Each structure stands twice: as structure tokens, then as C-alpha cells.
Image 1: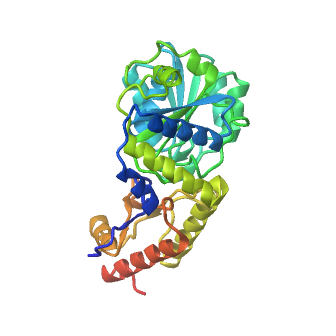
Image 2: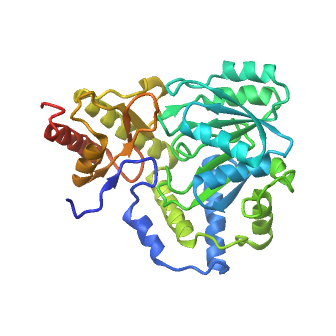
Image 3: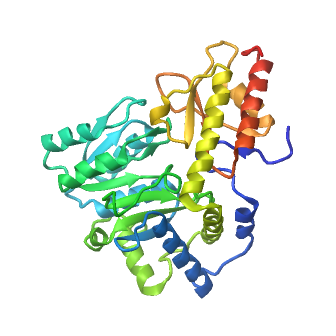
Length: 369
């Protein structure tokens, strides 16, 4: 077993840089001016990534990405709202479950896990039900790595005068979304994904007018984004105990993000990782689940080898012993496993991971090389 910490080839938490981890070695007072400045700087930098400073607020929230998704639905969808949830994987289903638990009226449109939702689908659904007020979309569905055509769908939603809520958990920071070109009420992301921070903080970009109109919507005190933003705007402080070390780590990760060259450079590195992975696995005879045209460079789902000697748990443990942590599949119909392309990882490390997979499959006598 390697004594070096393994590289996380997962969709988050993921491998972070030494600088990002080092930033967590300082304790911060949650009401201290220096920490308040850190939070303000963080929100300003995040807004810049979506070109949203003029039109949107960035509201940070304690907790995982799912906390932020629930907060966005609960705050921005009025209690008499009606949400159309577009589903082609587990996270779309989770969003629908949130609507159900919160008592928000919703309908779902589900496509196969290898089938993007199309703008034509959304056009037809909105014409069929004029009572829909909001449409919720997963930009990159992490259960497969599929990329949904956000810009085209957003245009249709705007033309119908409806509001768009985007779960961009796995895409934000690596796939470009411009708030001035893609109209949305909310875009939701988190610290532990493509920005390469650590998990523990979500954030929601909310259209200023929509957040101002959202007072009293929320089902929850802790998850009320309107109240969270109003308190922060008034005091500079978080309402309740903030995840101070997570904020500090994300601030440091954003410095490195900008040093690397921002979103274009981050996208290029992940795309290179993804291509190295796809090419290497293809040489081993391991097929990716999605066609390349709809594969986002975030996480790749692979068909498991058909050989009866292949067992995921043994495969996982052996690859981990060689220094790489993979991720189980999330599909119900076919056996798969997933490999993330994101995190503080480069092409050489991705090739090393492919080599480790090859060695393990040979050891398991699943593959003859």
C-alpha cells in the first residue's frame, strides 16, 4: 500500500494543491474584519467567473452543494410555484425529490442517461403546461458526465417568460456560463469541485430582482438565501457560524485558479485529462458510456469489463493501492465505474492512473497485455 495520499479521481471531494491545504492551517474569527474581507473577496471573484456582478448576487451557504440546491429552490420558488425538473441522471432525480420534500408543485421530464434534454423538448413542455413558473436543469449530470445544452434551453425558457434554475455543481469554473448571455434566476455550485477547494460551502448566484422578491418564500431559517444575503449586505458577516477554513481554502484555490489562467486554462487542463483517459482506456478495450459529443470533461463513465473475474470492490481496492481512488457507477441498468478528470491533477497523473488500471486488470486476469 502506498504511503503517499492517493489521487482522488472522483467528482468531489477531489485532490487539492498543497497551497490550498496549507490555507486551512490558520484559525479565523468569524466576526473578524479580516475574515469578512475574505468572504467579500471570495464572492467578488466568484461573480467575475460568471460575469454576473451587475445582474446577480453571490450568496454563500454553509454545507454541501445539495444544501445550496435546496436553499435555491426553497428561496426562489414561491410556495405556489410550479417547477419543471429536467432529468437524465441521479442529480436531476435528487432535485425533484427536493421539490417534493419542500412541498413545491413540480413535474418531471426524464430522458435516458445517455440522452441530453433538448431545447425542442423544453419548448414542447412549456407549451403544454403554461402554469410552469420555473425550469430546473442539471448542466453536467455527474452520474454519467453528460452535458446538457444549457444555452439553447435557456433561450427557450426566457422566450416563454419562465425562470431558470441551474445546478452547475460539476461544471462551474470549467465550463463557461456568462450571466449576460444565459438568462438564469439561479446558478448553484460548490467549493469542492472545479475550483479545487475543499467541500463544505455552496454558493448561489441569484438574479438581484428575484432575490429581492423572495422574502418569506423559504421553508427554513438556515437555508433562506434572501435573509442570508440581506444580513451579509448589512453587516459583512455570515448569519450563523461560517465554515471558516473552507472559505480560506477556497480563497486560496481561487488565487491559483486565476494564476493558472482562469476558466479557459482550467477547461483546457481538464479536457486534456479527459482525452488522455478516454484514449488510454480505449486501448485497454474499456468502452466509455457516452459518445464524445455529449461527454463533458468532468467525469467519465465506463462500462465494466464483462469478464466474471472482474469485481468492482476488488478492482477499486487494487487501483487504490497503486495510488488512485476511482468512483463507483451510478447507473441502474448497466454495470459501470467512473473516473473523474477534475482536481489538482495533470495529464501525466491521468496517464499513470490508466497504467494502474491496466496493471490491475492484468493482475485480476481480466485483461491480457
